[in-house]
Image (cartoon, rainbow, N blue to C red; front, side, top):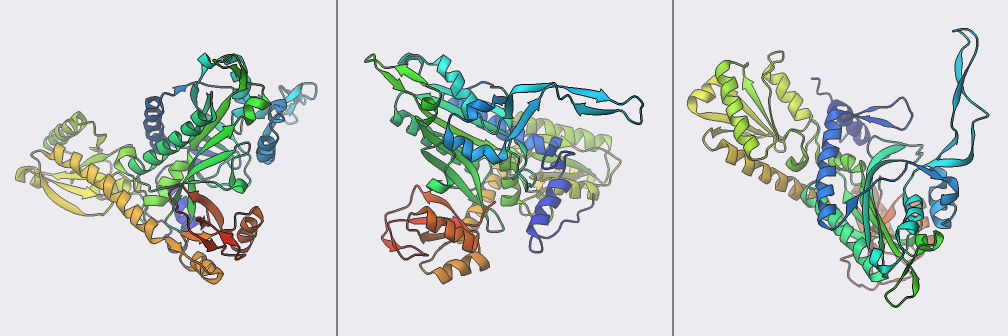
Length: 491
């Protein structure tokens, strides 16, 4: 396998695209802005999905599925919501094609002009509207609450500037939609799911995140409050990795969803929605990978350990490899034995390095005679000879160690790239020369926020939830400020 990857230091954007291609994660689609997720890339998403699904169900949620198509009139019912998505909606106007032309040379398929829909359908950019139209029928009294539903689905947002996993016209995600009797219950739910996302990002993705609140300008369309987790990529740009929204009663009022309280009063329901998507795969790539290819945290690696006979397979090596593999599988480890004799070990080593397998075991006859095996780590590229006795426990412990080491390495980078500044000149200098999060005061106005973005391309990523009150002056206007916020250039 050719290993030519553009170095991160030369062209970070091309480096990312090279890894997506050469690590066999995704291909471009015939439809502009869409992607074909290849088996290795989809397996990573499956592990993300499965882990999150367990976490959702542990917090009381159940899965359901709602239609892909949404009547256009539904989006008109919540003004802020439709304004937020109007520029990204794909619209279905007809329901039939027909063939015209009398010869093979002239025959073509066209839209049947007589098959126009009475009402256009929107390919879902998100499902709040159709779900709240449904909740109107599901909710009558306080006994029906809370409703805690999640769905795994695809959505379409007609993005013009796309990048695999990070921003595509169609992507996979989960979206939670919950209904509650009180504002406090809904707010507690929104905060709970933010914590679930943060735990997943740090414990499974080994990606440190900052929990915060979005400014009004960056808030989800139709929400009263948007909570987020923000991560930092190796090029110093931020990535919004997940959001959880307190929707207030906006959608309940738009779709007339009320419930009868214990006191026999009609009240509007309170709502949340929350989601993460396949952009997490992009975040995983950019958090850990290097110039030799993909680096994966063991918890999400489709193959956690590969065993490669050296210099080529033989009955004795096959038997020993399969025995090791069986012991590893008994510990719940995902392992592959590569006894294909079509490729040399060196080729295989490069291939598994490229696709990010965390641990490689090399086993030759000399190793077998000496009762040992060569263990190579993908994260540090170090190798050592380890006794075959209890190799299963050794590898299990090593995977845990690698998972923790990746998180600590990413956290150290993130922490080194949170810079406090109090002068505009320093603000611009840090963004240009160092990157990362810039902790600075802001006067709280959307006008200032937009002006800073126009001048520097940096946005307020979040108001940190663990931030402390601190009197200061806005980095741009000098007006009073009570707390620092985090600015960064972002994906």
